[in-house]
Length: 123
Image (cartoon, rainbow, N blue to C red; front, side, top):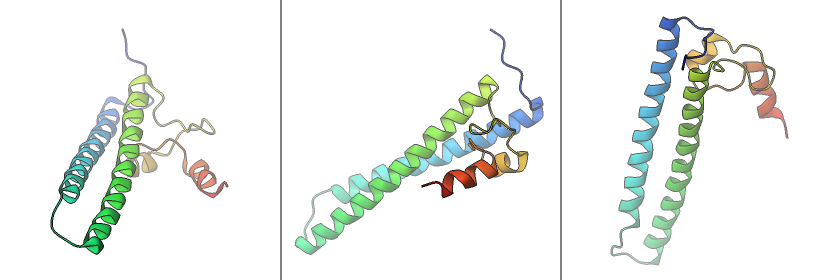
């Protein structure tokens, strides 16, 4: 089965793939570290009810951060699929090309800058 033609050359495709893979490695390390922190915080230990309440708050915060990292990881995985299918670098909202500068800064970008700004402002 042949690979879809990319709008990027081989060198640029390799660079962008490398950026996505590096982002994935970083996120996986962050999620793993966060899960380890949660396990450590969740371990029973001495302390009064104030200590336990503080630990519960910390666990909730770290769990939320882990959820955010996991969503970012899903975005990176989706970007890698788009890169493989030829849809990478195309805005999912307007269908125009996403600027290379944006892709280098945010490798998993799904929207061009104008559409991303509109998405963030929308209610």
